[in-house]
Image 1 (tube, rainbow, N blue to C red):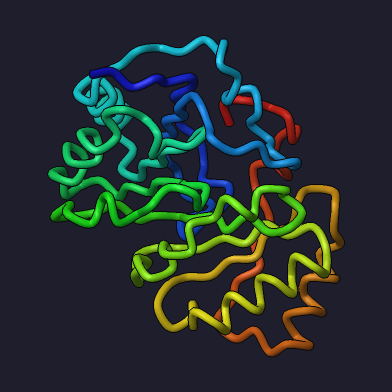
Image 2 (cartoon, rainbow, N blue to C red):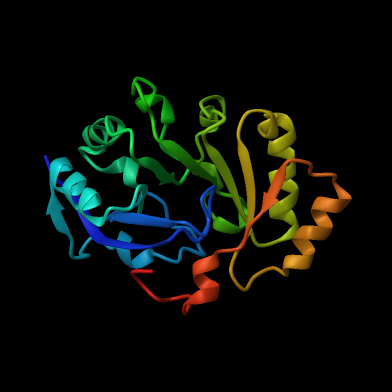
Length: 221
C-alpha cells in the first residue's frame, strides 16, 4: 500500500505545541471537507500530483532529515489508506515526536490500539468553516494530555461556540486548547478581549507563525 505525498520538507512548526521548533513535514493529498478558509485547498484537488510512497520510504526520508519533530498533515492524513501502518512504524522510534493534524471528522478511536500513539492536533470546525456538521463529537472523549484541540475562529459566533465546547467537554482539564484566528478575518484584540471577558483560563491564543515569516500563500514552508 502507498501513501499519496504532495509535499515533504523541513521548516519550523508554525503552530501547535512545538511552534517555532524545526519539524519534518509530510503533507498528504485529499480531504473530505471543504472549509471556506482552507489555505491548502490545492492539496485537496482530486487531480493534484503526488508521490506514491510506502510507509518505509516516508520513514527513511524523515530519518534522513535528522530532524526529530514530525508533522503529518494534509489534506486529511487520517484518510490515507496506510496511515495506520505509518503511525505504527513511526511509533517504534523513540527519537521521534510525531504530531498528526486532523480535521475533526475522522474518528480517533480507530487508532486507540497504537502502543505509542502520536500527538493528535484536532481541529473543531466552527460555523465560519461551513463544515461544522461534519464534526465527530465522540473525538472529544479520545483526547489526552499529549493531544491538542484547535479552534480556528473568524467571528464572535465562532468564539462563542468554542467557549461552549470548552466548557461542556471540560477540555482544558484533559488536553491542550488553542484558539487561532482565520488569517485576515478577525482582529487579534477581539480574541484576547473575548478570552478576558470569559475567563478562558488554560486556553492558548496562537497565530500562524509561518504566515508572518513568509507570504501566506507560500508552499513548502
